[in-house]
Length: 131
Image (tube, rainbow, N blue to C red; front, side, top):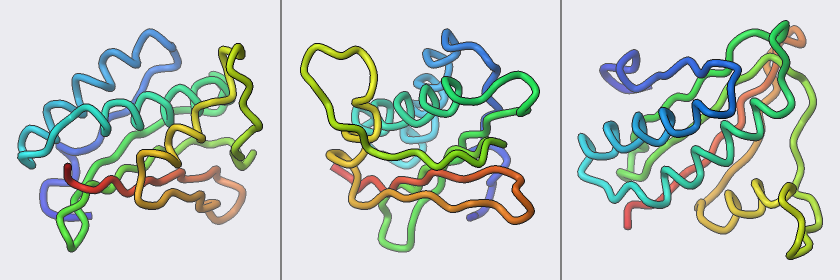
């Protein structure tokens, strides 16, 4: 993480309504980076919603972190305490769910999942190019 990592981190409450706060946080950080916020807000919403949908109160906090990569893209990661690894589902056009990681894949240069040691959970990350 780069300088000022704490101000680029948000602990997300276990409440899907918090996604609006997530977008506000992303706008604030991408504004400091001089980046357009549309794609970062979209990707953050999907990653956080996914984490909240599968985590429960007992799993603890979901944390969103943002930083810049060496080549000035946006590094985004969402950490949660569940060990279930997300995967892209087949999407059908009428389903309300299952599109999240498809969207993340479409708008990110790269995304992936990193399990944490000791069954402590996982980090899902995405790299978003400057537009």
